[in-house]
Length: 439
Image 1 (cartoon, rainbow, N blue to C red):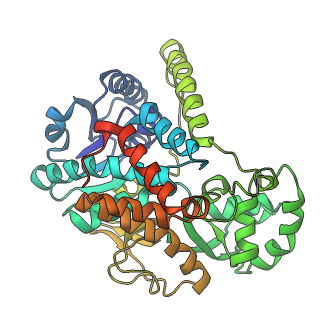
Image 2 (cartoon, rainbow, N blue to C red):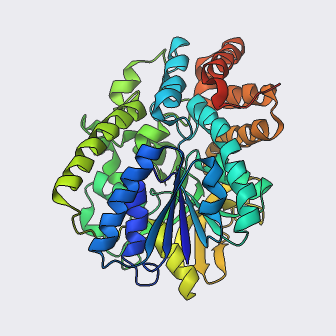
């Protein structure tokens, strides 16, 4: 068996996913093929994973592939391909995504999923993933592509619509959605055995049902506790609680993410909302800097004291692979093309996040019917941007980038059309060769 990791220089995540595989008796004998275009980061990952492999009993083997000229060899014969690339990295591209819009008065929190930052991130990543897809169609046509890279719905949706690669998008937020809500409202004692139903789009999938282990609906008690939480100045989850108040349901991804997926919370005319809802502007750049520094320290400690014992995480990837290999059932929340109408009141060309059954024949999405109309309406404001960004990447038409930005809920609520177009032009110029040419 061969498991290829694209973007293996994402060392912490590569360690988690491949470390999970090494914890599985089914997967530990695999060849773990690491691919990256950064030699130093690739070597750091190899060093850590080789030490981990030996600590786990020396099963399997690790191979490395540096640069685009070796990409096909990294993919050749792969059974599973895990994608965690970040095209343009923090420096320069994430910095550009945040600093150029600031000149126009547009502030962001994360900028990796929606908003002008998510649009630009998608546009510079799709061409690279298109290259991956063409190589995979040639050298590992039956491989399952597990995409972890954001913007999830844009990238997974492009792969699902315009390539022959079997693709499922995976996110961390579905697994912890219910527990995060219960912890926020002080109902930690109800987490054990909790049952839920989650569907929508990535980072804005809705917690449609939440029941305790005895089948009792927990939403009524949650709603009784919301006002006290919103009144707490230290509560960091206020945007998601406001979603429950105003749209009826909690969402999968954090409040700092969801603060920029709508026109409600980051508004230059209402600066007091930032403090009221504890919205951390420029949060993703801050995280990037901290992660880079943190990894340097952690890497030095590992080289000095060795690998610590680790347990298998809750990441979906290794469990999906194990399920496919052993033909045992496993349920995930996956990002899949809505071509069969799994969510009836969202477009068929949208990438949706729904419960999926995994077994020996792959990933099988489950139909969930129609979302509550207000939830579907909120999702559509994001899907509009996702579909137009995909169309821009496919056609190379500049107008579609303008349209994606104009229809982005946050951008469109803050800037006029002429300013949006000028900002897009400046972003494209600042990105230089990180983007293809548009006409």
